[in-house]
Image 1 (spheres, rainbow, N blue to C red):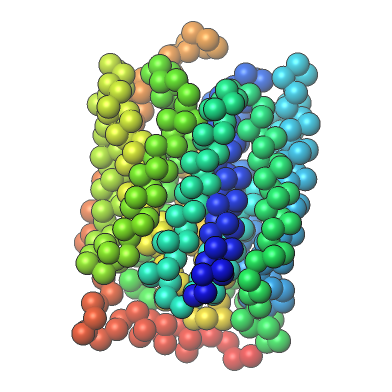
Image 2 (tube, rainbow, N blue to C red):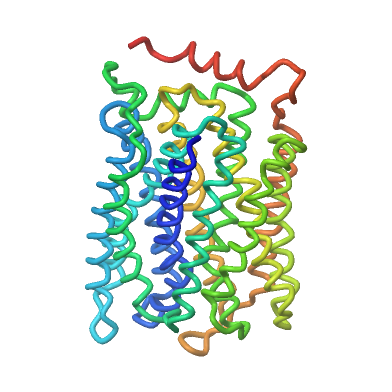
Length: 424
């Protein structure tokens, strides 16, 4: 991969995750000030997963068949910036719209943003010569973007204000324009006849016929249910515990993500897919365990430790899963395959997780308004146990692709999937 191409892809990843990190972490802190309760917040964190269920297959199919991926990426981000500006206009603290109206505007935004998570992966990987070695080095700039967003928000003292949403809108417009200058990534299946199967994403679903990939997808879906607790409640949790500058503190997770992203190629060659995924799952169990143990007394090192573990949680599971998916999927449906991964994880898994987290928060909350108190120890115990159970399930049932010198099961899986593709 040419150095200039790598630089352009790195900037793409930086902007992609700067957008998300600028508002997603602290949304609860401002929305709570304008009338959002636990149930409304649960829907704020559910509209993204719902969008993840609806849009990635369709947008992935467009990128696979009709238009260059970088152009689709640009259009989606420009439209997303418009929806975020609409949401901002509804959030005036003096006279805000109803939570339903604000959540509907955010839903429109997420319909545009969620497909871009898969599209940026596709643009990056289709311009690489070795995704296992090169993708982590490019993807780490997405982590830098998330960290930079946290620094900007806390540095400006905007953790509890509307500014994060305004910054997200501006960054979306910037990313939209920049996308048109990315390396040209033509649709790999251009000119082939489109079918109803492709419109529904059935071509990507064929990957689930592979037993190892099916177990991976089920585990990925399930692990995202406890994951939702972190994104939805961790900022409120550490703020309640008395930690200042919550956006900055939450960025510690991304700082550790940088370290582990850079050394991922080494771990990949030493551990293989299964052990990488298991380490990521174990980190989730330990993280929630630390939150539960440190909750009552506000033990700072336990709370910070749980945040720092995010690097292992994300890199070893999600980034490994993205590379695994790219290796398994036939070239003609790689965008759809990445979209399917988003659907099952950030879509179905996070949707269920957001609703469960909202219900659990309400269940463990006593009192109302400013007098409300959450039993954080009991709240965090649940996702710790759930993540542990999923880890055991995966360890027992997943078949690791063989190491070099052995028959390549991943190549055999690809061949089987390709054989099941409809003829053009």
